[in-house]
Length: 166
Length: 119
Image 1 (cartoon, chains in turn yellow, green):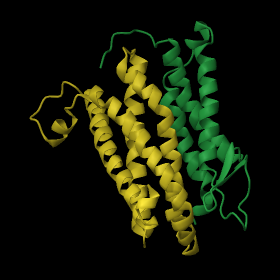
Image 2 (image 1 turned 120 degrees about the horizontal axis):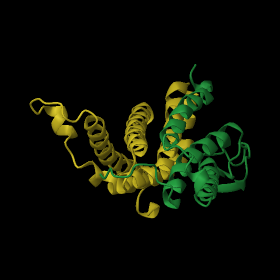
Image 3 (image 1 turned 30 degrees about the horizontal axis):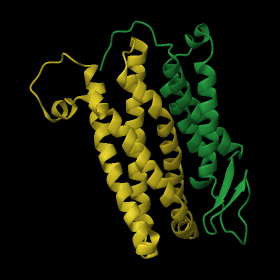
């Protein structure tokens, strides 16, 4: 595939695909996390507002798409990482943008933690669960959403600091 | 979303997936801190070496992230299988809360491990 693009266009294409998958994942996980957090307060009366409407989704329907998007986004991110290590990180270190580099390093770690949680996350949403498992389902989902927000924002910061082609 | 069971499941699938997540986080942290990637990768030359190898003049910077992931995934799969095929009495003692608690506790540890960059 690299043969059909110039080097820079190829990596930019991968980065945009990675970004689009991440946006979809962020939306799905945010809806789902809001739904599980709001379900704890079920029964609160009041007129429907933005938060209630945002949370009123069929949370179990998001499970497969979250798993698939996380894995695909992870694979693309991992592929891009080899180019980042040479073309982005070295110049950022030379410019002493250490906090930006550190922020991105933490993103890698969060993405791996999230990847490892996917099997249990999937299990919890697809099976009958006990009270303690219901709590685990809530907090695993919230952890994945928080990790997704962090990884998304960290990637965005690094792209602002030194995107491909800059 | 179904909520009918009264006790956490002890099925092999449940225990495997429950143990896999936190084991992955712990093994990833260990392989990062103690330099245990299964392999090191040199993105400038596409060369791979087993274990932890340093950056070299000829091959450029070494990447360990792929190796850490491989260490963590292989190790957590083995630990997950070990837990899944352990006696039911053992499986009953694995609390579901470790699934999210251990990764949460390891986040500050990972932040600390990057202290070089927070200056």
